[in-house]
Length: 416
Ligand SMILES: [Zn+2]
Image (cartoon, rainbow, N blue to C red; front, top):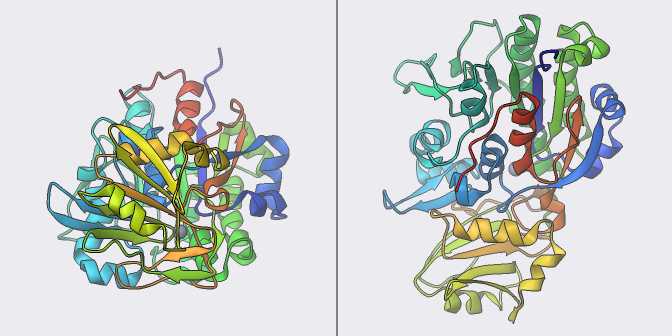
């Protein structure tokens, strides 16, 4: 039997299915012509750290335990903020935010009970690589490029915003001009180097710049940003000798982590004296009186579906109605809601924003007139999912890890 082709997993942050389906950019169009496509579900909250942990570990948040962009860390009795906005990062402390996002998300917050795709494949003797993805835990120790920053454990080939580089590639600095796509350009430069050397069995190629542009411009309008993400994919193809040669050598998964919806109104969620952690279109309340909080939220138009547990049952409430069938109307609703609520780091009450609404973050920042995501609603929760040279695309982003592992005949550890 022929050795399975190496796999490139491309994650374009925040890319909606409609934008993907209408894309007339060359690399995406070429891959779409050669692969199998479907719309798949994200997880809840549909926010990047949660979603990337689900893609990397093949699990919902009850297993990987990353609950939100901002949350209360019960063990350390403090707020963890992964950078909802620059203002929120400053409010939580810039150094603390960077340490939580870059180091502790992987070293401390990500459950040991979850197994990353890098851990799964490398324990089977394969070589994995990761470029810029915030969920990177692996078994190889990497020293930073800047003195004073802690070492981290990542996959064998590991590149993270110029801060960790397992190999010298000559790539330019990652963070020169975010709005002009310098991070994806850095990824492209590293990706080109890895493809030229055939340096991996599985590579996770994470392109965050599209989401950044889409937050500012609104969903389905960031065409220039998509063209730059596409160019970053074309660089991989060029390094392999062109699109056909690329597919001769590699199997491909291309997806996003969550969708986006347009922000028409913003509000600060009011839960009385209880702690609210809110960002984008999801919020959590840490409280000893979940029902009272949920009832208080009835009068707040920003609150859409509200979840809490009572007598061991998940209660699903919206505008005063309690009906578990409210979850029938959103993608993968029951599984996503239950998994979010069971996360030991989550608040006792979870709030999915109503359509068109966004919650103010720690610093009062928002994306009014632009795009946002995080809720259970369709626009935030659907992602494009394309596979080329692999089994058909999975229905959930939690299926990507298993799909790739199966391609290599590697059995993945199933979390309890
Ligand atoms: Zn985003």
